[in-house]
Amino acid sequence: MIHFEFIWALAAIPLPLLVYWLPSKKQVEAAPLKMPTLHKGIQATEFTPEKKKAPLLILSLVWILLVTASTQPQWLGEAVNVPTEGREMMIAVDLSGSMQVEDMNLNGRSVNRLDMLKVLLGDFIERRSGDRLGLILFGDDAYMQTPMTFDRKTVQQMLDETVLGLVGKQTAIGDAIALAVKRFDEKKESNRVLLLLTDGQNTAGKITPEQALELAVAKDITIYSIGIGADVMVQNSLFGARRVNPSSELDEESLQQLADKTGGQYFRARASEDMSQIYQLLDNLEPIEQEQQQMRPLTALFYWPLGLALLLSFGTLLASTLSNSQLFQTRTLSKQERN
Image (cartoon, rainbow, N blue to C red):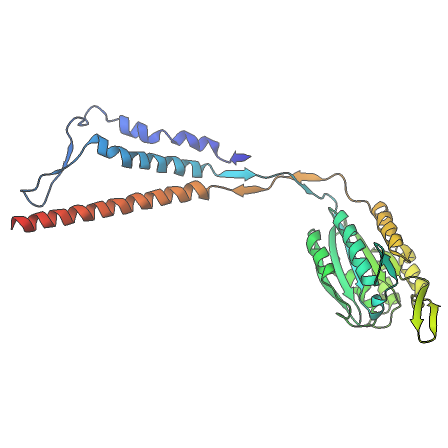
């Protein structure tokens, strides 16, 4: 709907009529206006009231448009929810070489761990309306891919664009936690949560998980750790098929300790179904804020009537200039003919 900030400005529309009618009795009404010419032999050009109607209507329209622009019309958009709680959730995703192991089943087909994570984590991100989300990618080092933002679509897009080997083949869990601690805002009312997803153990980085844990505890950050990978996988070789454990390098003890010491929880995702259930459980453990304020975005519209008024004024001025130019040429030709 349209909203006028200064609706009372519309009272100025009849002002030109008042100015026109105040000195009305001494105005010459019947006699046409005559413009003097440069040559006595040329008859004066007459401007009758009929000829004055067109520019008068244009000037009236320009005045109405200017008054309308002065009311500052605005378009009131649809109501948008504004979060009242400052929850911040950082998501740290492991991009080490082991994430390419195809031991996950998604919609009836075998996929690697990263592809499964992209699909199910994308659904989780979409549901986190009202939370500020950030994305960290870690391998040999930890990198901030997306800073804290309410723009969930951007976070999901950055996750979808990740590729294996982007940040190396090792696993710097300690660096990922330390980077998350550093990038959380220093807000006392903020509920800071780190979601750590990995399929291995700390094999790289400058900071150990134990050192990073001390930082997280000091900053009151809750860590939810998720260990990814199946327990059994059939592997074909020259000697036939054999059953192997693709998650033998997963350090569950360390991930459990990270969660326990920060008041979080450790989850084990052996299949895509487990991961989906974990995300639903996280929605319950860290519920989305329901009591939200609403705001309606305003879009300024004053430049439309103002622009149209300027366009009409310019067009009228241009038409008047062309008309005077043609009149001058006619007078010049008439004078030449008489000479």
